[in-house]
Length: 71
Picture 1: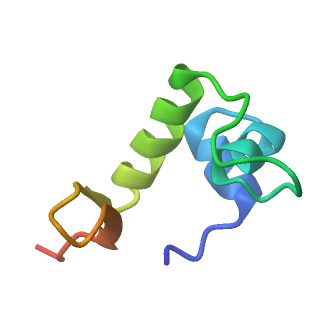
Picture 2 (picture 1 turned 180 degrees about the vertical axis):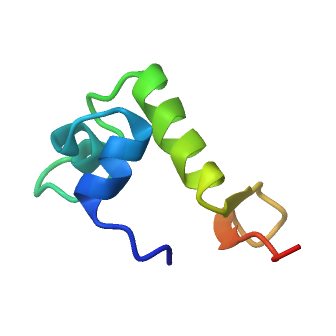
């Protein structure tokens, strides 16, 4: 969605690539966010929001993400 590599996003968030992989649940046998502190989760979310991602709350269709409209 943002065309960011994992190392780029990890750097923007101030977390390691391994932590980012745990946040994203991209490691076999690891659930999304498993073993990740709330602080690290918040850092990744803040980095995504700063890059233009908007988090959408549950609204009957499930939670999700989208890109913010250009202003």
